Image 1 (cartoon, rainbow, N blue to C red):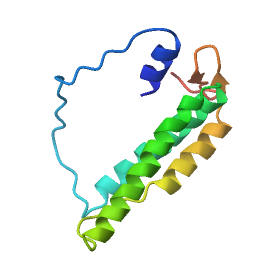
Image 2 (image 1 turned 30 degrees about the horizontal axis):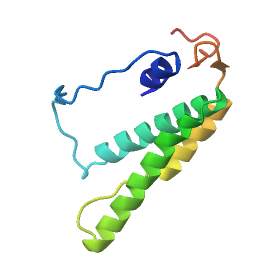
Image 3 (image 1 turned 135 degrees about the vertical axis):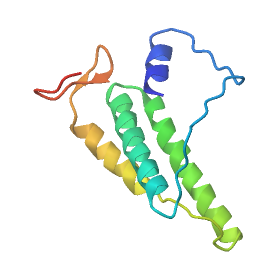
Length: 122
């Protein structure tokens, strides 16, 4: 998503091809917390990238936050209507963690990327 957004802002076109298919081999189960951990990690990343975009002057960076929180609200509502069938992973606190982390990271505004930390190899 980050590369897509930067390409669009730089004036490039981005192709969306609905015929492309990605197959993820292997499965994660809710029972051993793998899916929860994965989704929380995604949420931290989404929050950090949203903050980077906002700090670079793109209010479009807020869109992923709205999308994720909206999806969470819908999931909670659907679960309530189905009376608790199926697990729900609350992600909004992890979006907040990502926002906070994104606020504290250095940004190269020219390339709209996070700066590497001292001693870190990119």
